[in-house]
Length: 510
Ligand SMILES: Nc1ncnc2c1ncn2[C@@H]1O[C@H](COP(=O)(O)OP(=O)(O)OP(=O)(O)O)[C@@H](O)[C@H]1O
Ligand SMILES: C[C@@](O)(CCO)CC(=O)[O-]
Image 1 (cartoon, rainbow, N blue to C red):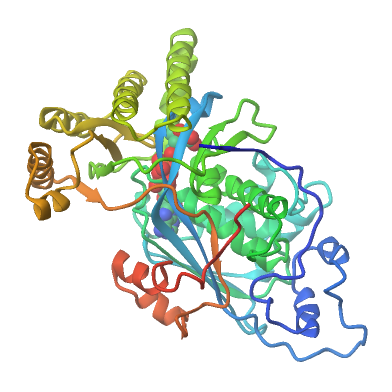
Image 2 (image 1 turned 45 degrees about the horizontal axis):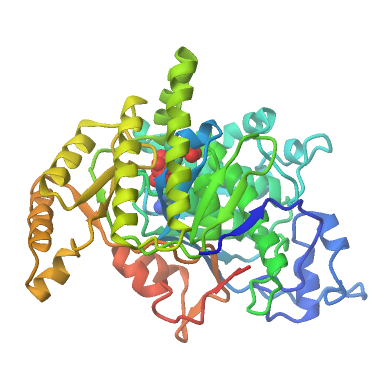
């Protein structure tokens, strides 16, 4: 089990000759697109493969072809909440993913349109009306390679009039959801784009359920960051023969801007969610100093743990739960600090098992399971459990099939159950028709369903952010109508998921 140590890189100005959407374009097309990119300095550092046309006459300007980016959700296996306060956490990518289709419009339109039907958001801004003066002022302007760890309040304020008009007539809760997603998008667009950015429609579909602790916000922030960085030509690849170091740098750049998006949605994120959504696999993550990049170890050989992912059906807000723990820390710093320390040692103990000799052995699984039980107890002491989570734990404990803890922010949302060796999935047992553990699991699944708990079928540890450019899969062009018309999560997965055409999607794989 070799983990690769990967600290944040110091981003260097580096532009790409192979930006998605332009990969197949001619040099003159690329040069022409250049004019619409975000910042002059990106263009001036472009390498020798990409030059502006030397002649003054404008080349014809075909629209950049539509492309799709995708990023996974996640489950936090150990260490949520403590990770916000500088302790270690282990999180794994799951196979549920978000997909963002970017369709460039004719230049005459000058619009920026968000179509996010999962939450019912449909909003259009007029690009010239946006607060470019504030965002591009020399004292505040950010470069795509900057490390941004806090929001600039003046910029948030400048953006506010364009956010308050988003779904202004919707109910408070819906409006809040819409405005969170719109703020994350707009802050990144204003930071990475320019008044000359091409008009575009961004259509988002996700198979990650929203707001249940499975990192839906991080997965959309990674998609948004990747799409905008690609459009401003600040990423190279992904391509199969890309040097490992270069791929790592691209992922780091995506991750940094995804974190900025998370700042707008969460208020005080640790960065673990966007880090695992960007890199995929599993990560050991710790951020001691928010002004610096976190310490991240990518766990590429994370074991295929037999996990059940169960949704309590109880809505929650990550921002609220994180704030709750923050208040407890202020009121009881010493006691809360000890709880965080205990969670940290659970995470480290689990890390040494999952990276050790035999993580799948009965003894290892039992050890990992017991650590989950203690981790959940400590999270309960921080006040982030919920009666529905406790009911779920009671039912799983009674059945004897495994160990359960909440995952993500808590306050409702999802829990993970690590199954004891022998407690295979109910459908497998049904086929084999044997095993007392199996029937206990089947019985549990029946009971959970009867009490309104939902089960998500997912695997852990897959790829991080991916790009489908152009948006063509098994010879079928995926346009906005087809994409938005896909029915439900299954429809989206069938239409654009990696299972349909394995080679179509490209990933940065350091
Ligand atoms: N599919 C989606 N479409 C549009 N916006 C989304 C989508 N998924 C998430 N969001 C945005 O992210 C917010 C949910 O973030 P929140 O942190 O509360 O939940 P989560 O990320 O699912 O949970 P956790 O952070 O605990 O893993 C939504 O209110 C919305 O603004
Ligand atoms: C609760 C928390 O630890 C995990 C949310 O998925 C918050 C964070 O790390 O940003």
